[in-house]
Length: 589
Image (cartoon, rainbow, N blue to C red):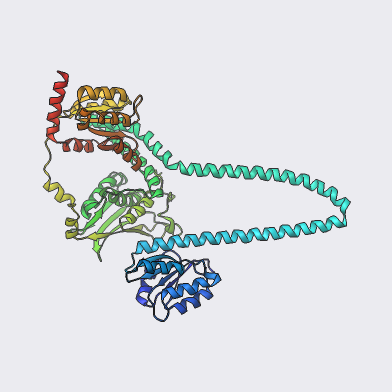
């Protein structure tokens, strides 16, 4: 531990190139990295300084890593100092045993995997900090005990000198002390209660966010269905057309806010799942611009795009990458005065894709720049605009890019000087993209012929009458034969009577919930050929696993994306529809 409070880590290796590698991997955490090129030099530095972790090369001249570790742990000061052995040769079980006997905490093989080394060192540093906190607490407790002993000694001396007077004082003091103890006990009990409540609140935070998202999605679903129904009808009145577009835009905004709430929960638990595929950067930029275009038009900004003509591909989740780039563009649009300039430049530089977004906006104060990617950080505007949102957009950007092996940085010269955000992503070659089994978006669209629309027999079950009727009407307008059920029991009865090809089942229905309906359908011979789709406001990974365990084939989250449902129906085999019609006809007969 340095005088400035930094944690020190000792790097021991006789090869300077490896020391440089360790320093580059562990740099950026605020740790003090100290290098030693031999076991003797390492022992000398240990005598002069306290280290949280020792990264020790096994194969060194004069004194190998095993001997150095033994000497380190024989010293009483260093017997608990964790040691990570680094080895570039095959390590047998016997070597492992030898290392653990002399005090090794873990092993790392060469070539070093940066993420593995960082994680191992980070865990040991955190343990070191916890032990240090415990030592400080013990010292504080010992000092308090000493002070208490001194006070008792003084009290005894005073009692000897003025026994009668002190007795009266002591009686008053005891009374006051009892009152203070009762007060203290009450405060301790209250603090304990508050701490337990905070822990319980933290445990239930994710459940609350999921519940909130579910409750918000339930009314959003019939609204979206109603808007889609209106879209299928011609509107002659310009005001009605404008009103429909306003509802559609604001509905999209509400849906994004719900998704942001869930992303907060997923980020804190590290449970954002990625559906990776090969993505063209030009398409990624186009989709991101499309998401933020309404805001840019509303503000009257001039957006210039400069994307390299050559193909640039990255491997990742197109939706999440679009979200990341779109959030940066949205941030530029929000914090730039009306009529401002925004530019996006995408280039391939040294094996990476760089996307630079510059704006002429209000800039970022110098004291806020280190925190701009922290959760719930928002700039306070003085532009007359009121900004909505949860202040998590840039935090989501950083997390999503890190999960793709990328980075995001921000630079501004200060207030009123504009901002620049730099996104980097690892680029992949065409050969890698082909080997991964994922085609680029353009190629995929060019090779796959659209499937002909097939009339399906569909059961829709939902206890929300607005959601049920609007979705059924949409499907009927699409040419499908639709059967409706307002609860789980009616859904099961309708499924047995009509033998649909597809059943869209709401999960939270009365009498029988969607899970139970799915299980009972799957238990019947006729029910094994039905495609079951869970339609629900619950969209976390645990909800998808549970629906799969109940027998569902797909899991769609409210408000329902009609394009996704249409694509799902088109993917079903045509033969299934014909067989279902024949079976249903026999059943009715």
